[in-house]
Length: 320
Image 1 (cartoon, rainbow, N blue to C red):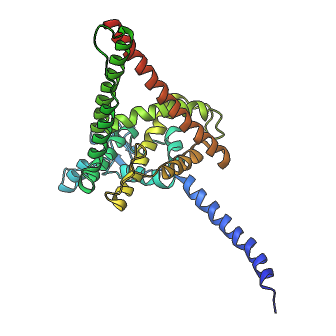
Image 2: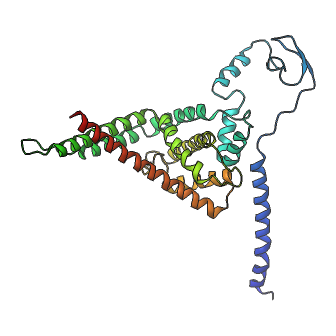
Image 3: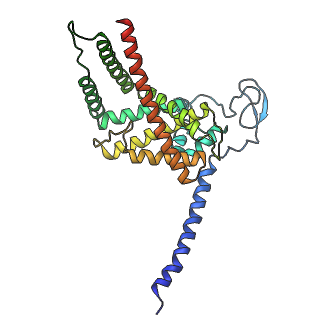
């Protein structure tokens, strides 16, 4: 009788090799991206400038070769193009952000931009979809969370001593701290009502940090601040889509431990997935650099809070 352990030892390498081949094919499929549309060989006459040409677009004015009379179908397509649906660029971009986010962002930064939707415009549209879903599925969750946060901030206000024995310097400091708390409440309310703006500002800070942390990337060394900014805007849209999926599956049982409606461990995995594909580091180094990025973001936020507190106290003291 054949030894079963010997059979297992022989089978494991074969299974591993098969998995590696499938993973290699899947990675190649992820890297492939969108292929350019083949050129038309038919001769056209441009409806705009009367230039005779062959191809998909007029070389003189840039108008498409398939322009025809207005019909009901044409009107619907043009209306959908306003939202990025007529030429499928928005659905395509959202899909690529899920299964090949880093490679897609790299394609966009390298100039292959025609197949994809503009990142900032897409962020506002995805934010609108996210807030709409949140309004219908869990309308009171975010409002209750913001109300609780505002109440906690109000409870943290300091009692300012009064009377002849009160020290003026201490009074100015406490008034400044209370003014800072009021400013934080106002800013929090604004970002709650304008989440896309908050995402852009927070990911702008992320862009500064990733530009420094990933500057020696094997795939894209020395990315400038603008490239890092657009990368983070794409990632913000992706995180909102994952949050939207969490809302649809979990309903009112939402997480509140970060700025997105998802558990923090899932947020970390998504960022790791993005940065691994985008920057091309090994997995251990990508993990370390992702942790450094998050620590840098927390340190930058803490520094901004301390600077805001100091400016509030100094401003109150000068105007007292």
